[in-house]
Image (cartoon, rainbow, N blue to C red; front, side, top):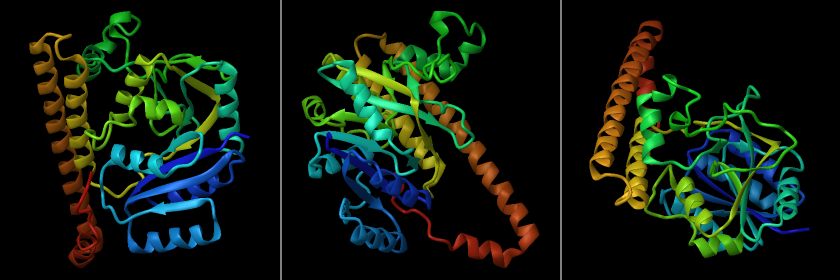
Length: 319
């Protein structure tokens, strides 16, 4: 049996966190589960420490504040003792035997360096966007942002970044350019050789950057569709606009890191402008939706109820 260390980063995660941890602790090959607490409420922390008192395999790292996803993953890896690291989102729930099957397929591949991930599914059973992906380039980001894929969806130059809409046979392990950072395994040696996650990324795109750098070392990136992991997205109580802003910052950092000097400078500038323009539209849409929602809430429940809602704890150190 190969010792696997599950590393989970949590920031104001909802009730699904408990399900995720218990499912990880029940995996046969898992020697330990390391929860990096980037910021949860006192009540949630009390429950987690209660669980850790009953589960010797669970370790909680807290007190460092919200240091960002990439930095927190590296912190968890520094404390891990397993031969293989399993990075798992706090809102992803593993089925029984998932870890063992993924390790078995990785060894069966014969690859010296590898990363392997399951098929991420939505709660309704459909494959989740981002479960398997192409390498992110300025061009396919432009195709996504401009929706050029709708003009000629089968044209290779207008191929989409995410591959969840393409055919996927459940019994075949596939080599893919990129997995999702929500659930994947990588050997400790390969993780350390690539230098871990780039801590310049606070949230989003750090996984794509990681797989790009890992691939440059000759690693095989493997996708196992027969292992299905349910991923409950958006489980953290965080302002979605702040998350969107972090995502746009990370995308611009990624393109500047990997494509400066390869793509024309003007194209990268155009893409940067399009990303921030889309952020602006998204901001207006979210704020308008929130305003309308509050108006209807006030009409139904009265101004006092609205005042109570506004006094609820609000995230002050959002990603």
